[in-house]
Image (tube, rainbow, N blue to C red; front, side):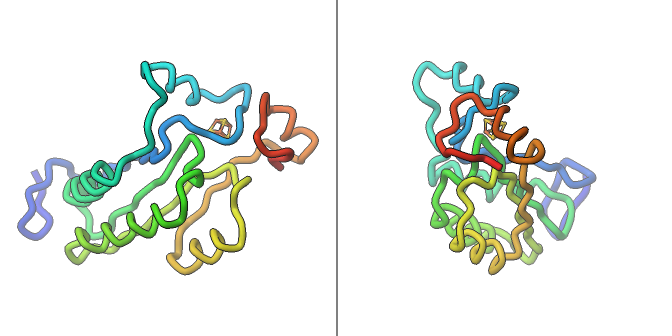
Length: 153
Ligand code: SF4
C-alpha cells in the first residue's frame, strides 16, 4: 500500500476512471455504438449523474489516486448534454477536494454541441478535448442512424 501525504492509497499507479455524467444518453445514434444499449439495463430511463453522486465521485476519486496529479476523464454518451454549469460545479468540487494536488480534465465528445461558450470554457480551464469523427462529412454522416442534428461532421 502506498501513501500520498497521510492518505493511505491501495493502488501504486494512477487509476483512470471514465466518468459518464449523462449515462448512455447521446444526441446521435451511430449504428456501431456499443454504449447506447446500456440504457436497456435499467427499467427506467437512466438518470443523469446527480449532484450528490458527482461530489462523492470527485472526493473518492481524488483520494484513490497515488500521484500528485489527478486526471478526470468525462465520457459519454455525449457529455456535453450536461450544461457548462455542471462542469463548473465539478471543477469547484475538484478544487475543494484536491488537497494540494494538480487536477486535469479531459472530455470526449462528438463535438456537435460545441459552440463559442464551450470553447471559451475549455480554454479558460485548460481542458483537453477529444473529438470522435469517422472521416469526411459524406462518410461520417452515413454512420448515424437517427441524428438529432442534421450533420455530425
Ligand atoms: S456519438 Fe458516440 S456515444 Fe453517441 S451514438 Fe455515436 S458512438 Fe455512441
